[in-house]
Length: 245
Image 1 (cartoon, rainbow, N blue to C red):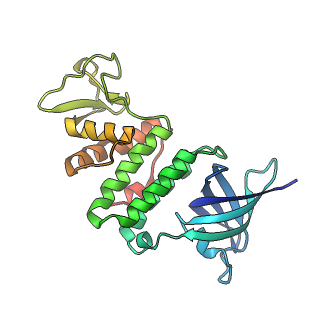
Image 2: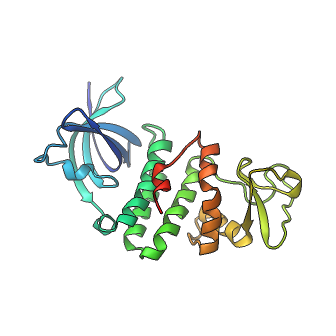
Image 3: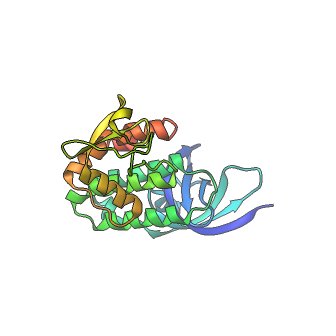
């Protein structure tokens, strides 16, 4: 027997299904990430077509059936389409980075109000951001999302032996493969050099004290973030990040 679920959700991704329908991946506030079949939504006169755009924030109703992994969407009404983001192609590209990350990393049907709130906060920050702040904002929230995926890097002492990392010329060794800072003894071929302010910026992001990344820290973080995700998140590769230039 079907249960009727009414909730709010963000559209993370869609893919065509047959001639006029879509299968949508939706991050909801109460049911976690779900897959929904939106029948007929690609028809020009469909009342739900606008609600199935990426990162659209919707009020949705769907039918949940046992032994099904895709549920039928009954209705979707846009709560917020974030027009300030959609009017800027660069902001759209940035929003798609977080959409793809959550679509590929969140487990199915596990409610996570923290991630839901974080994504809403990200989109609200994006709509207000100036063009110069967009890249740092996207990378900052992407890094913060690592903690929800259980792959937050170790930044306090050597991840291998827990001894002080030392460092020279204001730089600290960060091992991408080990997942944290390392001392000289545990230097490996995946080490990149991070400035002290980059390490401090990462700590602030994870501790949620502030989300500020200057140009130097941004360059250093971007130098390892793709490889870090690939190693620690089951070979994760974000196509949207590659195209977010």
